[in-house]
Length: 317
Image: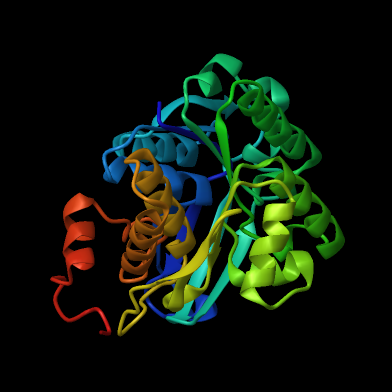
């Protein structure tokens, strides 16, 4: 197994008859969740990924497992909860830079995860453990579950990759800041967005943010800065790797997860750090060109076309 991740994936409904939920009478059903977005992004690029979670014993849970399994992700560690439902959310895409999300996840099956859901032998098979700041926000037991997974990884010299993925709707800012900093201190590689860095450290300068994250204990920090690209920081070097600005953005949700998948793919292919970041920028950019959280995640052919500059007229050169 190349990468193991854990967290909640939900059923996603988006309006069809109107861009606004309150005027829409029909909705399309899809799925979305940061961790499965990353896992699917990795399988599309030819890597092995496994997902740990819970789903409800309902038709949504069955459909979700079938879909994620169909994308090549191992779902053997996903448990079916007999009493709690699969979580839902609605996404309203008003424009490429105006997206509203409403969650219905309180008491969901995934929020009931406990440390007992973690199989140590499963994580020990992986090269990387991928975690986000969403999962510990779901419940105290989810927080303990993430810590259990991280401790297993660290005990077995498995690299921990942490994407803060700040969701202010899920918890207080004080608790979010405390837990995100705690997880940053336990991680080997951190993938914050620029706004997340400002939230965590009350600092706006990219270079200072990189230094602050490194002081937390990580060996590599990748600071995402939207279409501009991303900075990488190690104890020996740092630089901005330019992004792939697109002329239009259809749906920005999932771009950060695409970035994470692209970067981890680069690590698995043993690319130099700057090339891994460049791949991440490309996968993230392509993810914005299609409506849906995972639909725009690239395969190798699409990725190579964009990176070679032969992807038609979509790139704003």
